[in-house]
Length: 133
Length: 402
Image (cartoon, rainbow over the protein chains, first blue to last red):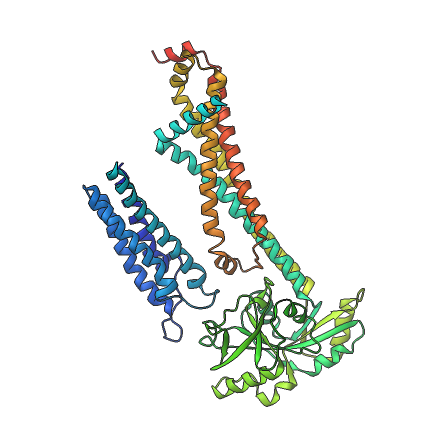
């Protein structure tokens, strides 16, 4: 199996994981008194980002050109950074460290985002190095 | 020295040449190291939690209203916000009972979920003049004493971005933060009776009434008692019970014992899982190495024909085993770190027992231990698997299957 295919599968799986973290694995807080909290909106954006990363991963697997695959990998890396920024800076989660979104969802999304960014960047760097040689 | 270097190079080349096989082998080491690091860290955190809780309890006996024993335990163990009241005369009466060294009272009420920190927190008013339970550890961390209008927060309470906490639409400055107690008190906010009166008035204005603020001086939620050294706690309880009705006693020693029992069953589950995973890791590595080396019999026979000694062949495979074990061990350790540290609070909330991470040096020790154990597993299993092959007759090995 080529490097691109392995990277694509890993990124696609991490994208799927990103979408599942706030909805299934570490579910965000339920609405309180009919009001949604910050973590609900973070969850909505993360599901969208996760699907985008999943599609990018599949595109990497299907790419026949190395250049196209590494371009998709860079796009995945950018999305990976966004996966981290949504619960930490852009929207955030509930303030209390005891809330499930703060103690479970947030760290899980940070780890998933970091892995997506690392996988995407590694693929792009490896393409650039091989092109140089 | 160059022989060792060559063996290492040969081993690494073999690992890189067969990435899938090496990945499967490494996975067994990852599981072993991960289980050891996470399991040992969890066990140490649980023991650390119960020890810290015991240290911080301070009182020997708690008097609570007859119907509120479970709620009082919840406040102490999980920080679940509750409120209950009894007549304040119990506090003055308990202080005069023979065998009581000191006693103090506390008043419990709660915040709103939308106030501070997104969740309801336990609000506790205490009497700084008689207090012996909170005082000793406020002085450890407080930036200043708890004056009227300011509060002391538990270690798990997060203030607003301006550094204050908000209850019933009014903000209060934070005079200090307590050290970790691994108990429900980590999720509580402490204040003087005057601040409590202010908050109760605000709560009443918002339509939340715990007690009529005019009457708050006549009620307490709990009386905490420390008995004299050598005094019989049961006798003290009987004496207090003669003078007051509608009360219940919670002995902190019994409370700690109950938690220890719960902790014991969690620890048993961790021990069983840890043992099963370590045995699985070791057996899988032995099995994999045996199958792989059996397949490579002819490769070893060619090496023997080319003049490589059987000791050298053992060294080659030992290097492979050590490399796979160490690399898998380090990967498992990284995974373990990604589980134990970021999900610290999640684990604590899920286990529902006192949980406090041990000192950094202890955690580092468990990490090193995990990598060393999987390296040992790798080297032992590769060595044992090669040992039988090394003594086989080269001629018969080469002719086998013809």
